[in-house]
Figure 1 (tube, rainbow, N blue to C red):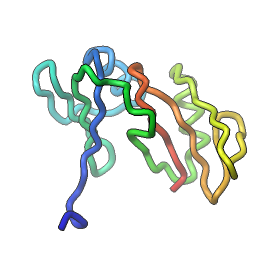
Figure 2: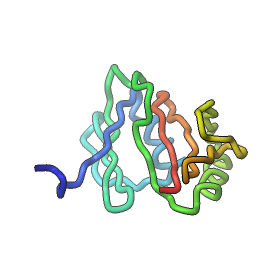
Figure 3: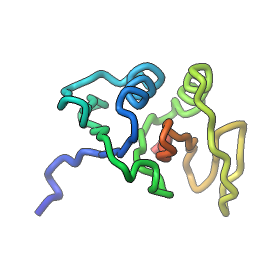
Figure 4: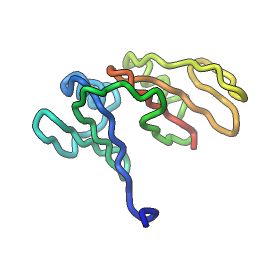
Length: 125
C-alpha cells in the first residue's frame, strides 16, 4: 500500500528558531517551506525533513533521522565536528569506536543530537 510512496521524517523541537539555526546553519539544510512559527520543511536529498514545534520535543530515546552518506561518513563527521557538533559514543555489541565513528556489521555510523536532544545519525549505508 505505501511501499512506493515517499516518507517524510518529522522531528519535534521546543524552539523553532534555535532548531532552524542548527538544521540550516550547522547541518546546511535548505528551507523548502515554512508554516508560520510551527513547522519548517527542509529539503534533504530527494526527500524532506519536517521540524515542528511540540511540547514533546526530545522525548524519543532512539534515532529519529538518519542520513546515508556512503563512504563520506568520516569526512562528514569531521565537518560536523568543525561546526560544533558533539558526537554520541555508545557501547554496542559488534561495534568499535574509531574517533567519533562506530564501525562494525559492515557499516560506519556516527550519532549526534540536535539542540532538543533528538538523536540523529550519518551512516555509510
